Length: 382
Ligand code: PLP
Image (cartoon, rainbow, N blue to C red; front, side, top):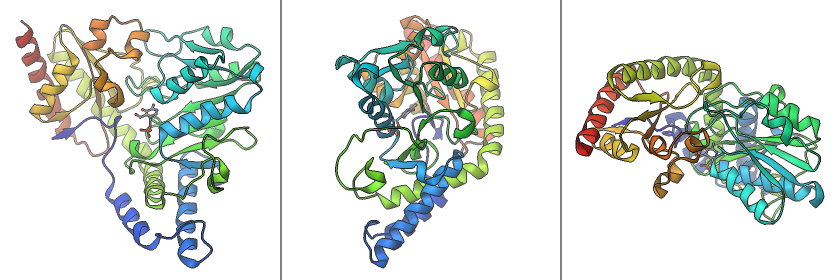
């Protein structure tokens, strides 16, 4: 099986597994306990915090560990809105966010808070001019993802930060797909909150983090003990946090080389697919500076993306027809619809997302399998 669904999740790196096995054993203590077993667990958690911080150019004490990207996004969006005065708790987001941001924004809207969902252009990037209109008094938070999980489109965050500054709002970015694939430095991004997730960068599931700039006001979502500065109470999941930290350390070391290699592989994959399959085209931005290096979202005319994905699985290639968490509801992708595509084109899309475990041979074989799967689906529909 060739695995080309790294935006859904990634295989756990062997070095991460080893670090987690050590933590399960030597770090079994409660990290809040005073005895030496507890202190060893604390030491492991704090090392992971430093590793996670280093990957995004942050200070360790600005990192709050969570159960993953979804919890980090909810803490950021709901936490900022709740900490703001009700009359100035508006939120601005985009139509192409992951459900982990869209759903808390919709929840705030249902509670009567003003929420603006900004449109995107045909490339899947925030449409020109929409930010200035959205920057009004009464907005507490802009939350715009750094890179989209379906198309890989990188969003113009510098512009978002400029607009937010103009109306005194803070900026959160869901960087779950970007961290580990792009160089991310919170100091240059200029945002105040950033979410990232372990299982997207070869760490275990069930760990993630919200980076919170010092001084940024945030209300907790959970109430309990004083772990994670009371912003995320509950006994720490030491092995998952340790695995996340190790995965961040590995990503820091490999990012530049992985990204160069993935770009070449992805571009070769696309060139060959476009050359061999009539009616195939790329969805979204294609420039290297505006798209994740590993992501390829392709539409296949007169095909059902789900049928292609199922055929590919039988042939030995794991891909995805949309975000993994919405693949079950059969609705056309809200991201592709927001880009102005018809429901038929959106339904014909398949996302291929490559990773550091893929080889050049995988790419060549993947092209052959996609050619076969599309031919099978077209023949069945004829
Ligand atoms: N945000 C984005 C952009 C994602 O792609 C995902 C996962 O697919 C999430 C948030 C949710 O992260 P997690 O699975 O760690 O909860």
